[in-house]
Length: 100
Image 1 (cartoon, rainbow, N blue to C red):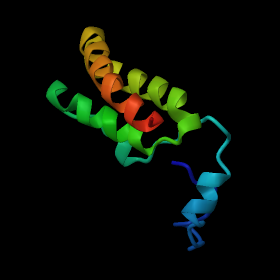
Image 2: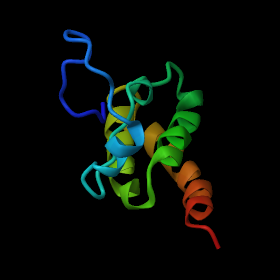
Image 3: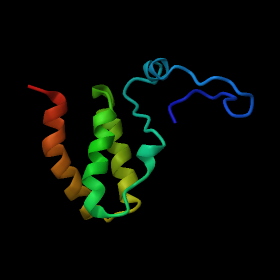
Image 4: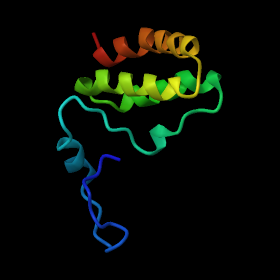
């Protein structure tokens, strides 16, 4: 979840500052939100889901985000469908993220 362990619900502890939590993540490790772990039902929506995952990753987390997205997607969709979607997304998203 990206949050440190705590008694948020059971003891009413306040949630930590999300910016502080993000900056304390280990370098290069992408931590998806619970919403990002929900895969689309249809393969037609797979590219959009991949884009959403990659756009929230910091540059140093891209490799980790790609690995996780590929593994999650392969659990629901066929390998050929996942590779095709990844190729399309990477052709557009990586240049957009990397910039000029």
